[in-house]
Amino acid sequence: MYGSILSKFTPDSLPFNLELLPKPAYLVGGAVRDAILERNRDYLDLDFILPAEAVNVARKIAKYHQAGFVLLDEQRQIARVVFPDATVDIAQQEGDSVEADLHRRDFTINAIAYNIHTQEIIDPLQGGADLEAGILRMISPANLEDDPLRLMRGYRQAAQLGFSIESETHSTIRGLASHLEKVAAERIRVELGYMLANPEGTLWLIKAVEDGLLKSSFKYATPQSCALIAEVDKVALQLTEEFPKLKGILAQNIRDTVKTTWLGIAKLACLVNSKPEIAEAELEKLTYSRAEIQSVTTALRTFPKLDTELSLREQYFLFREAGSVFPTTAILATAYGNVVRKVSENKPLITYASLLSRYLTPDDPVAHPTQLVSGTHIISSLNIPSSPLIGKLLTEIAVAQVEGKISTSYEAIEFAKKMVVGNG
Image (cartoon, rainbow, N blue to C red; front, top):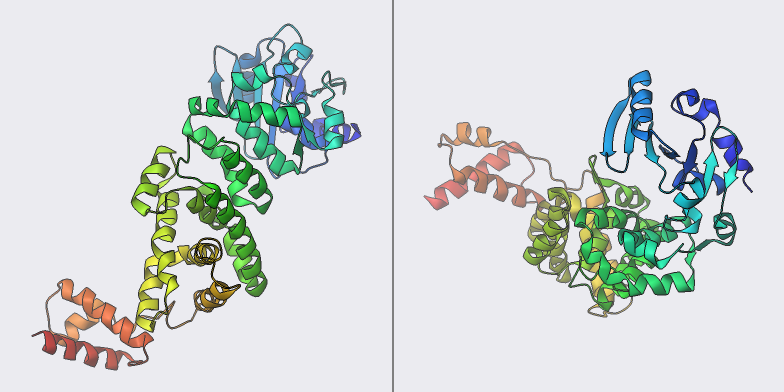
């Protein structure tokens, strides 16, 4: 069972010279757990505990390799060394032995230590057995209460690993749910990230709402919110089968620097108040980025507009308003149609699929019209001054184009000329 660790963490596989670590030195936490499960990581995230001098050792490693150094907690002696392809946290053990340190952790599967020098496994809480059984089991209620974020982390890890939560542990988490009010909003937001982005996280995201873990974060979340989140996954699956290109879009982060996906935005919109201005205040309090807040509020503002038959003019303005949020808008509208309005089976899917098809077609004349003329062209051709009128003319030219009334720059200028004369 533990053989995978021996092959995973060899001197050649570490981002630093192993001789810089004193003896003993123990690798702990998620890296050990994932190695036992043979789960590969794109980015190495290693946690070591040392009996003493943890910060000094981290400084020594950073200096030797000319890597980044971050002092995380001077009092508890925790520091981080940052490499291009790895992060190494080095902490001083809590208690007088590695076993004592492991007894202070959250779940048994995260309380396994590996002596990097002797290849010895230390597993005093039988975390290996729980890994084999696929169970998340607490070490003690006091450990969870000591850092309430561990409550959310349990749901996130259950989602990531495909594990169940042992019944007594689950009951304890529910009982301690109110303690999450003490946790900084940004820490909760990070734990939510995986559950929002991945279908595997939906079950535990819904449980987090039902069990009261998100009560302080999303006070407007209801059982209907849970039904909508589940429906979002169902709708996304149906639409990606019809539009394979959509699958990649929904899995993309909304920005390179923001780790929330477009699918995650749809689920986040289910958790907040449906009124965009109230949702904006909620998300600001939770320290979501401006890009995430704008994406959610745009989806909330635009998805109700899909309820009626839209003229080409209305479609044009809808695509302009929604922009890159439109796939989320379509999924949200379909989910609401199925859950809230309980319309006939697949009616919203059929209705919104045609608009989604337009959006996914790069040269669609309604969703992605090409500009026939520029503002400068209008000004020079009609000999009129720069003013807000130019913007209005460009908009009406674009609408006339999507309606098939004009198709060339000459026709666009003539169209603008008639508008100017009419307004005069």
